[in-house]
Image 1 (tube, rainbow over the protein chains, first blue to last red):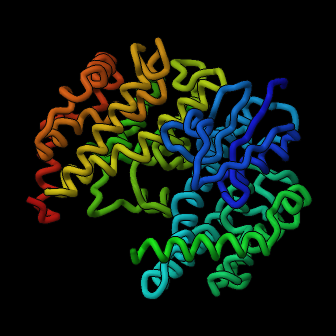
Image 2 (cartoon, one colour; image 1 turned 120 degrees about the vertical axis):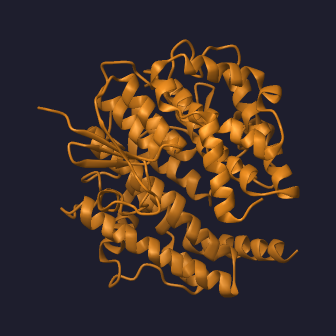
Image 3 (tube, each protein chain N blue to C red; image 1 turned 90 degrees about the horizontal axis):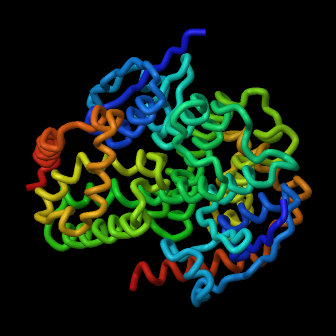
Length: 229
Length: 219
């Protein structure tokens, strides 16, 4: 499938990382434009006037925003190479459901842990554990064969989303002093995330640990400061 | 094979209305089950253990939860009639983007309008109108969001029209005055039987909101 592909993103953004991974899985060549989110470019604002956020995929000059929308677009447009979503409508609905759950429930809870301290943070930590429990049960019920990835031997949309949220668990541990991925409490989630982080494409694409630690520390400090301002 | 389709729903839910509209557009026969949200049925809890919410579409015993996911599922399974999503991937992406926008904004802002007062309510009204105007701009001069044909974004948004009267009365403003083209679009959608049968009477919705306000102690 011809046509120029440009991704406007930010190296530390989990949303941006999702799209990069999807492009890599499909073997699509693209140009990456690193956006300074404290000083958004004219181009970004023009391509995503509604949300003014990254990632934005620009294909043949036409912009698409929202990471999950972008990944489905990629899957539908580049039909050679591994599928990112299953073919069966019911399986697709399941993938969309769990991607939505991970994004809206689990990720939001983790972000709250990052941005808060004291009691608020304790509550948020509890919530993360509740959501992980639901995810663990969900995998048990919906993907009982225990195959490495939802997609078989290739990484698909749900794997990409889970990795974008939990792949940095070691960074979370170091910066927040909380361990979320307890292999005893969440054996399936843990083995899934571990397998994902070891997958060659994923491993290559992951930002270096120290760099992520530095970024998360900065992000947390900034959030705490503006909360008290 | 006989298709068994059940919809667990609650009459004022805009999310439930989306699924009702999609099923009607496709001409699918289904069993509508009204849930009492203060006393959720064992079936609902079994079919949606994660969120315990309606709507839940149950197709041959298998549940599909989350309204936009259910609408896409319906479109994919019953693909030979009245397509709701465009066939072109770029246009599909735009449709998904705007449906997601509706999901991110309209319900929560609408809820703030009827459940708050003073500054908080004013701020919600302002943002709500801005969001509707953005949607109105996206609609432009097209009959429907997808163009000539009624589709995904129309299904995602039109249920909220049945709540406009409640928002207007609680908030003391006129949505038609602010967004006349959007209201015209909604009335156009209501000419379709799938929509007119799915949407409850706005006065009934308003009555429901008044009960909610009493329950939550908002006057």
